[in-house]
Image 1 (tube, rainbow, N blue to C red):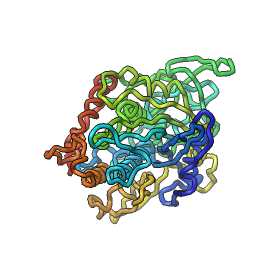
Image 2: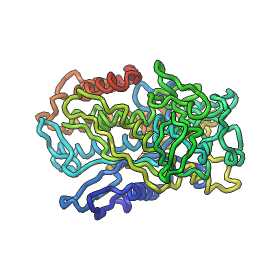
Image 3: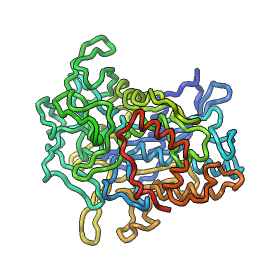
Image 4: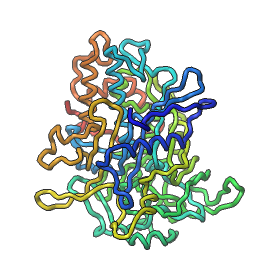
Length: 512
């Protein structure tokens, strides 16, 4: 095991420390190879990780191990999605970390079904089913508040807007050949840092990033931004902090994620009236829409359906839930996080056996990710060029420059633990290789599906779960739909909490 990926700590009352979690994740990231990492002082990214928590039998110790880690800030546009499942649609750090964890869980299930054993799973009561070992749980860490609803955070009169105004003029918008979007800031970095937000700004010229980093490109957090622990919602105009001092809430942090069609729209009013809180949102794509729901929405769904997904639900007697979620140092509001990740699904009922409303405990660390946007600004030197998300320009034969938006995945598996992608494909592949297995990210739907089918093939036919004993199962869609308990739980969640959640295009899921 690499140094820093695993730590065993004495723990009175068996409590996990948010700062110890953050430190372990940052150390694990620092041990990865240089490839795909941001250039210090010029590029920034977001980090997320899944940790396996194993509590000691004596209840006086807890072992924490990073089993999956991801970076990334972008997702591809709708037209770049593939009917063969060979493109990684969503490269936000939280999604990357969760998909890497799926690779880890498939490996652990391989060990379980083959008799080699697993540190995660033990046999359950139902035929072909497995469950978590006693005292094992999973924790999700993210270096920044999730994009979407959780990032609509009140600001006091002492806080600057963390993202500067951006132009909505078409001449400032660019779309690359892969369906990814970028836009230019209205002002230079020096001008942006010195300015406070103006309440008279129009809806078109003021929009915050990530939270939603895919929307802001090179836009910067103000260097003086500090962690917030406010308790008011985005509609409140005044609040009292922990010292009893009264603060005026003059504005809110903005999210670039857009309200899903058919529901409430953002009022786009100045100040606290800009957004509609609590609604479903899709990750932004100005001019090129996306079909990816915000990380806030996906995490809320994981709190009911689990993070294992439909395929692994075939093998699991109970869904897997994150017991804790830790956020690094960044703009943060506990009540807003509670609303976005917990409250919206709190009343869901009539779930099938194995599913429940299991929201995580929400914690914040005081340690900031060294490659955050704010830290990158502090380290920026004259002559380094403009600050931007992690990526690099490259040229095809037609001498057309494309902006690569890079994400990194590392997970604790024996074969190919590291996977670096750019614009949904494996980083470094040529245009000629696109559409072949060589270009596929190990996290795309097609690769994870093939890994799952390998698990099915490795399972003794007599030990297969009942849901996998149907001869007509062929496509990715077939296997997902055959996970009946998961689909029933999803139907209850959709009808009771998220009726406007867009349905997947079946034509994009019929691959083998």
